[in-house]
Image 1 (tube, helix red, strand yellow):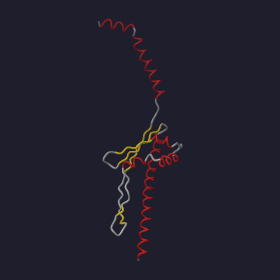
Image 2 (cartoon, rainbow, N blue to C red):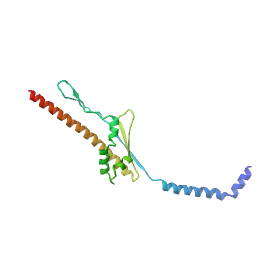
Image 3 (cartoon, one colour):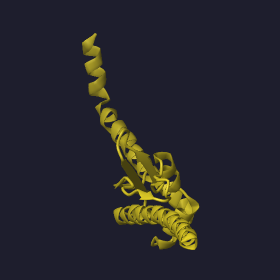
Image 4 (cartoon, rainbow, N blue to C red):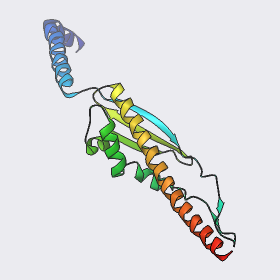
Length: 168
């Protein structure tokens, strides 16, 4: 019977207003205690091809600098050296474990794009600084790998030239 329902609501209308306000206030207070701000920033790295090839012997064996596979590049982003150097450069300084928990990397399928993402609870500037420093250290690390390979190649070519000069 709709009249009984309306009569009951009219008699207890205060409860229909007070109860949602009180429960909503409690929910808002508890939710405010349990949540906090989280800032995320993403950056793209583009993997470039290694362009040059060098002939290393008379028989025509060509040397092309080794290209890092996508899986290798992904694993170098979490290498100890990269995380240590990143943690030292950050303000405020963090441990490598904290840096690792703040960052993540993903590769976009069928492309040469890698997405670096940093999360921070301090500020957006902190997230920007973290992802920027991390990207710089990844680039520095891969450049150092290429420099080491180039140094080894230069030594090999020098040995080959010395052998050829000795034969002449």
